[in-house]
Length: 320
Length: 233
View 1 (cartoon, rainbow over the protein chains, first blue to last red):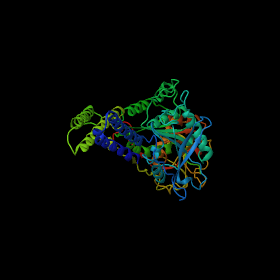
View 2: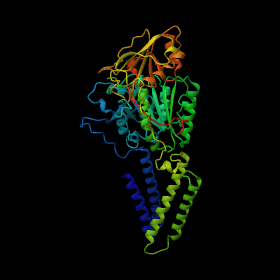
View 3: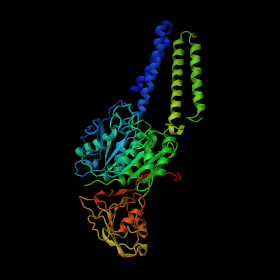
């Protein structure tokens, strides 16, 4: 809708400029030109927003709860006592969650930057992907969380605790797990918790898993990076918040990592290969390469089912 | 012409400049059609400028490195390998049996291993099951599974004086040939050095020592997989 409106705006300002030019003076003409430039800039921003879903324009319809069968995608707000952050989160509950008493494994799925979890829900069709993998038996019924990693939409946190800034790492690794354990029937042990993400979210998944191997057993990276590419404020972007550095200089934890990249996504491919080369036991590595497709949703749609299947095989199963 | 190449950027930028020039030159010309030619010129110039900016950003960030990437073509499909039936699948029943694989002699066990299958093993032919490898002296219960606990394949081995962890490392391959079992996440129960040596000698992530059996991975159908790095695509 906003895309159509913004393009109509570009068209309207161009017609107005053409039609009113001869009747206008300097001030009027300047205003007409300024209006045209603004409309073009606005249309560009709208398109970029459509690509990244940084400010989702349509709210994702919560799946009907009344039909009594099938999976659900809930929208909740997590108020974090440890991080003092309060952020929305989507929660996928598998069909098997209904009516049962079982406790399910959990995957935290992180989004890219700029972006929001809405990309998972809309562009990456995550709910139907999870439904299909679970129905085919390639994945056990799992609760999947889609938290925000951006307390401010245009602040790139890379899921770290920024020095003098938002404590996103604490939110994602302490507050979100505590909230989910308190509100849903999920496994409480480390063996039942995994991480995944695309782009910056993939960096987050690797970095958080390496930093908290006591809380997560496996992580899957879809086009991730070896470095955060931001200034954390305490220099840790070059050391403890840098998976490349951690893998080289710290003892590697007993953890399973899945690194996926696209062959023509230069930075992510180079970083992922670099990390793969550094990984040794007890860290277990699986790689997955898509031939081409760049740094795009098409690549992540291709990686999504294999990454979730792999996570299911490397996490503890549901407890009936 | 490549999507991220300089020739395309130069071409589109030159077209933008040409469109801008033409729009300015033609601005005072024409009569009734003047609003139309002017508006067309403005829109054309704006579109080409936006395209130039887009191409430069894309070249820098590598979002779509090629025309095929732009079309959403990844050149790769994830495939599910068919779950390979175990060579004993036709004969085995649920319950416990003595397992005598070809490599048995090399393991120098005090007695052949016993294998207990989950009760749903035969009913789920496309599924691989998690494994508990129990060394003598440990007690493993619940392998058959019930309503409240999923089952697993339990293999109980009794090492003899000549049993080495290195020799036992051929056991997973033997078991994977004979039965549908998980290729990772085995739970090894035992306090003997052979048990610890087996876990230490197996590939990373293959086995965990003395983990509670309720932390086993689930029984799963063959996963969708992408080619590994370095694999021929």
